[in-house]
Structure formats: C-alpha cells, structure tokens
Length: 315
Ligand code: AHG
Ligand code: MN
Ligand code: MN
Image 1 (cartoon, rainbow, N blue to C red):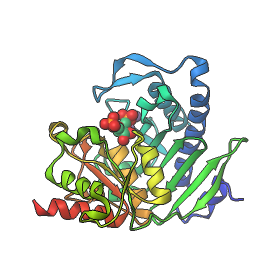
Image 2: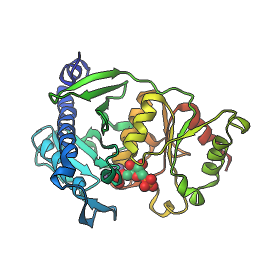
Image 3: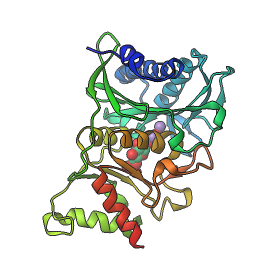
Image 4: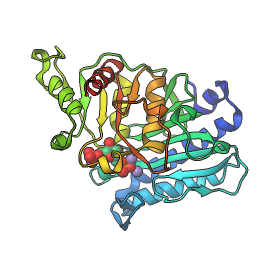
C-alpha cells in the first residue's frame, strides 16, 4: 500500500509544494471528522449571515474555513489564502512561495440531508499575483466526504485518488483514473431550463431524445448538487457536468467561481484526459479579473464537451 507521504515523495515536485498539498490533505481529514459528527455536535445549520457571494453561510462553511486556515498557518511555505468564505485574501505573514485558493466546503446545501460535500483547492505561485490563469496552477485537488472520504490530487500530469483510512492516513486507492472520451451520462440542473441559452437547450434536447435523436444513443441524468460529488463521479466513470451561463446568472458571469471551483476542477479533469470549457473558451485559459469571479463551467468526457462546444460555435 502507498500512503500520501510516500506518493508525494515519489513525485518530481518541490518538497515545499508537496508540503502545501499535505497541509490541505491534513485539513481535509480534520474536516471529514467534523462533518461525521456535526449532527451530534449541533453544527448543522445557518450562522445567520451571508458570505461575500451573498449566500447564506452555514456553521460548517465557517468551521471548514477555519480548519483550512489553521493548517495553512502552520505551514511557512504558504503566504496567501483566497477562500470562498473570506471577502479579502488573507496574508499569512510568511514569505512562503505558495498561495492557496479554496472552496473549504462545496455543496453545503447538501449538509442538512447527509449527502456528499467536498473541499476544493488550487496551489499557485504567490509571487505571480492573485489573478493567474488556471494554466499557472501548480497543483489542484479536492476531498469528497462521501461513504468513503476521498482525496483527489494532481500536479498536472495525472491524477491520484486516496482514501482516508480509520487511522487517519490517506491510502492510494486509484492511480491515474482516466475519464472515458465517450459517455452517456450528463449532469445539469434541469429546473433552470427556462433560463438556458440555445446551445444548452440544443445539447440537452439531443441527449433527452436518446437513440432517436442526433446523439444516436440513450443518456442518463445525474445531479447531486455538490460540484465535488458530480465531478468525482465523472472522474471515476465519465460523463459531463454543466453549469452554463444562463439568463438569470448572466449578470454575475455564471454560478460557479473561477479561482477555487472551476480552475482546480478543470486542471484535474484535463489531467485525467477530459476537457473543460465555458462553451467558448477553455476554462484554464481564462484571465481572471476578480478573486470571487464566476464563470460558466462545462467539463468532463471529451466527446461530450466537444458536442457542447460545437453547439456554441453555431451561434
Ligand atoms: P457552494 O456550496 O460552495 O456554494 O457550491 C454549490 C455549487 C456547486 O457545488 C453545485 O454544483 C451547485 O452549486 C449547485 O447549484 P444548484 O443549487 O443550482 O443545483
Ligand atoms: Mn462550491
Ligand atoms: Mn463552499
């Protein structure tokens, strides 16, 4: 068996960069423990105010953010934290070479019903400023708090999946998962259909038409409502995830956040052989203009992403 420390030591990356990833893994293991006991500890629920996104903050959003901050404060190689839960970047008072961008708890609307949530993060060079393209990410990962607790990591070449064991160690359980190019599964919130653009409507209509439609095959639909859970399914068995720009989210630029949701997930998906786009541009090539910027997100199996891009190219 290979554990995370052994795996990190075998990667040809700077040991300080590896230590930053290890700090996020340790934070995720601690968050997993908090989540497991949260209903007993009375921690499920709202804190009574909204975050910078104008969204209701849950107690566990705040706790998870604090756990990440605590672990990063213990690592002298991290100097800046950008978090969904913090309006401003936090300077950690070190001259560490690295910056973290994180969604400390993704899918928090699923907390009340004990459905998979996650932690997403990206590691970047602190010296290159807050607003770097996703291509500049040095590492990306997420933890998925499901029936098993998974940690999925990439330094850009391939992806590795670890599982948290009962001793609190991360064990490598799937090395180099590859996202199949073809898939018959799509994930989109269909309750938003009336807001969709023509490309999204066209693509989904073809899928729903199944073997009699232009796609020529039958599709299934899955939507957990936690990006981490939906992307983890796609990473392990293929499929496509769409949170497109629609008429309701257009003024905000989309629903999901570029720095700590779209970019790390796009890096992981590309490293596993999939693709990630807004419909018109590759997510990793977008130039960010603000740390909490939102973007359209379409990612997963390459053939499906291509079909969506073709729909956007039509108009
Ligand atoms: P967060 O809990 O960090 O705000 O993110 C929730 C996101 C993402 O996880 C998920 O894919 C999407 O919101 C779900 O959106 P809908 O509520 O429109 O289904
Ligand atoms: Mn999120
Ligand atoms: Mn969140």
